Length: 544
Image (cartoon, rainbow, N blue to C red):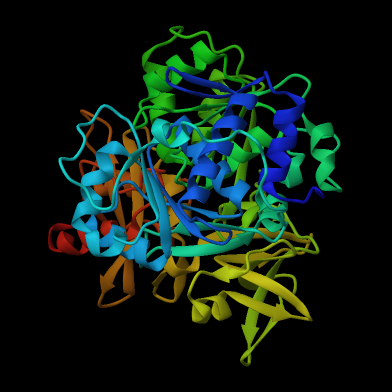
């Protein structure tokens, strides 16, 4: 059969070339490429025997584990579609995603089985429900029937006798949680490969593959050992995992259910980690704190790279890692579930600040709406950061949102990311932040991410989010929701004095709410909806 720009085709080719190379490590579980491929093939045959077909959606409802990647690859082998399910969802949210995503099967940790009993109306027709043992007690009765993961593999053939695949097979990533209900972003394998995974050439000097079979020439001779610190249910971590596998590298997963800096550095020392993948400051802060509190505890001399995407990675935190790892290569990427990777911050900050600066290209631009039509921005104009070329097909089951987000300009289809940006005179793009979170105060636009960057440069602040609250004079005022470091105290006046050194006066927080913990998703993404609710509830006690 022909080989396509299909993730199963390409990972199988890697497994055939380096079968005995270690592929995955998660806690005390280890797997070579041959073992990963064989077990995924067996699981694919089991799913097939239960009636799962090409195009069917299969839920992955797990913490980080080897089985997560085995189930993902099993779906790809069948041309089925793995769907990430947030393990923190409560019953109503679970019911929503099982219904909205049209799940026909599910692979889940044993401890999550009781949740399925509560949403029985949404799972009663599942063709297969496979539980990964995690030490929790089996449910006395369950609906649907639960099959243990290892039992599902028993007796299943290891031959790859599946139908020919396509570069147009689907990958659907559910994203959400900061505002509104989760939404499924529909990617073709080829589009996702080139938009988010470097075209299979992320670690190779040869660059992206020109044809699918080129993947074997992109396999690293000296494999890089990389650790994904976010949960695999988060797109940035899931994609990083695929990047590692496509390169024949070793992927290490954080098997703990939360991020503890000391635990992470223990893993890094033991596995001789070369590169870390994080999601912004929420992960950077505990990692840096652990290093500061334990000087000389770990031998981390093998580390030479760090990448971040999906959330703000402030300059002060990047500098913190450079102090501990001289010469480390840090990549601070712009991107989202809809855009993939849109380039990395060049480190050049323009007037009026912004989150960073990237180079304009034929597939990356600023688009604005004028007189009911869209056009590309001219130098100095602000619009929406946009991507063309390898982009998603749209949102699953939501043609209206698809039509608003994916538009045609000058005969080319573009994705509007939602981030406001300005085209500079030197043909670069300054990115300011998510327009939906923008605070309009007295006619001035304030982007929360930029203010948060300034706040987190203060030594007493552990974490912070910024939201807008109603103001009778200015329409909205900037409010800082702040988590202080243990034993520290900080006033609004002190915060304002500090921020004036970093940002313009109209962006300075005018009110302050102190919290025990900043609301974030498991991956570290900010939960502005909850932060705004907290701000409104406590607004009467805020200092003006």
